[in-house]
Image (tube, rainbow over all chains, first blue to last red; front, side, top):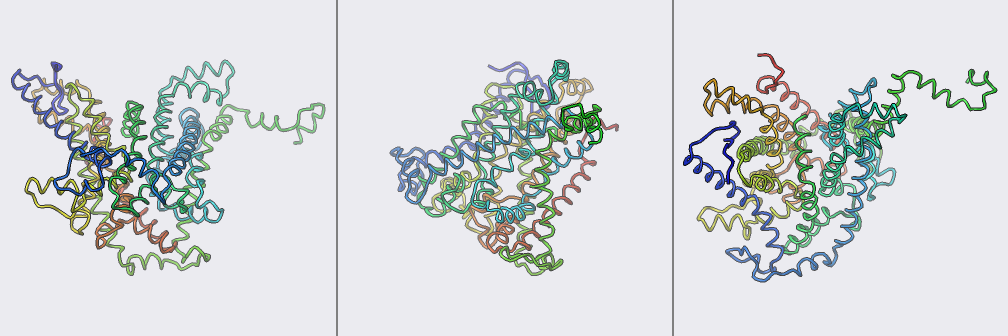
Length: 295
Length: 318
């Protein structure tokens, strides 16, 4: 059941005698199971509330399993009068897809330049890219808002999508650069001898070799954009242009007594990020780790 | 051009030869190609970061109600901000309080969780996933959900407190408990930091522990003199990023409390948002944003300075 050597709280390997070890393992499992229950309870509550009758959410003590599973909450919320969830889903998918595509192309180009080509000024630009991670968004937001207003971009998707093509996010550049630097330079040298130029090396050697890294960037970007609230809140005003994040909060503002429907719509919003996570779990955790450790 | 016209027999236009001249040396070619590759981010930084930064610095010295053109008023925005703006210091206090509670608690929680999850026993991957999943829930969905969990009358939290005989709380509905409630919410997301610490812990070479044990170190000493020092760079990174993020805390407060009750959760970024987009005082909003930038810079520098005292780097000769 258990491997012979345990690592006790990061203290390296400690060998216990049998009874003490069993006791220790039981204790660890008890803590872990209790913790896991606490962490999962909010999500469980989201789902269970999404399936309750509206009246059932007000009973005391609260019921953990709905008396009757009201699946109708999902279509009821989705097609709620005055709301436009199908439209919002499409808007979100469009914005998310465009940004993810733009980020992958732009960030990988830039990352290749930073990782593989030596030229004057490179390190300064790279430092500036890294420094921009720390910049509070509010500082650039106001002039950008004014500029978008002047060129008629307010209430369009351009402010949310176009910037992605200009660099694709400092974090993504950093992440891909780290990956590119692990690819043996000999591969490139061989390609140069065969007459390939840099662009071809990027496209035909680096990109295929870095598929896991690109997938990581794609998943992170997807989640970041899917979850973004601040950007759409500021740049979009017409309810037809809303994203799901704005839509869910709009719904909560107008109908804050429709608890089960609100939970159902929130749950729908969580599903794609959960699915993406379980597909790319290993990639994502590696990405978090790489970006977090080498900062 | 002169060169090109001399060899007029050559039907090829002058452009390739200019190109070839530019590409003469490998170094020059590298420079051109390098900048071509990083062109997107160079343009991006200029258009979407550096340009707007300078513009907002200028705007912060003007009166700019967006519909009319900006009017230079010197430092009046900054002076008014700290003297007349009624809730400026309240916003600072709320934001700092949040940063000084949520960030250390988050680091502590994530670190302890990572220690707990760094053991080779069966099913550990399941637990790691479980603690990480809350961090991928969208902020809006999480705010909607927690608003309901913390509902004073029908929420799960109070139901549990009541059933075990503990005093209930109004949570987000009362000034004293609103900010702690948001901190509590933020702790649901400690899984993000946990993953990073976990990787750090697994990166510590086992030989370090073995060598120390041969020298007779006990488990407390192993933790104090090996685990903890080797984790300080990771803790440091999380501290810096956590502080910066918490100074920009917005979504949950905007959705759940709108800064209330009685400005108890009036975060700095809520204030900037209101100035800019509710009252369209762009000059004042820009001044507030720049003030925040300076504070973040100073704070980051301070943390970096202090890091020499407590962050351990392996290259260091002691």
